[in-house]
Image (cartoon, rainbow, N blue to C red; front, side, top):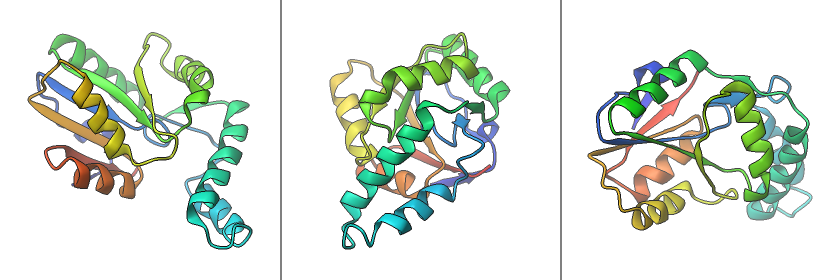
Length: 176
């Protein structure tokens, strides 16, 4: 696993799969700082008697209600657009892998189209479950074979989970 300060540090290689998180990696919401998630979980953990699964589910539900009516902002849009262009020219693929719930598809696509109007991505919704499991299912169901697979996420735990589940994946923790 490698720590990155910019999307520009992701190595671009032909015939690769680039699996990229959405929130805080490609887009962000100004009124939802990175610390928001931890604060809301801290608030709800006692309500659910320390049950982290129920607490995470509640936090995700609250977050999604806020995001539905929020304006997205890009994280390094010019660099992501260069990655898109590279992939189109070099037989590579971008797959967005998000913790969001699948019922957020319309909002997610609307927000991405505001920031990246000419890009219509393939998205896998993990419903706040282990991203490694969802990526493995995708890899098992695609006919495509990639020389390298790169996973980029702003949450270190997601990178650890994916790399533990799929050791052949190059993991990058993005902290901008």
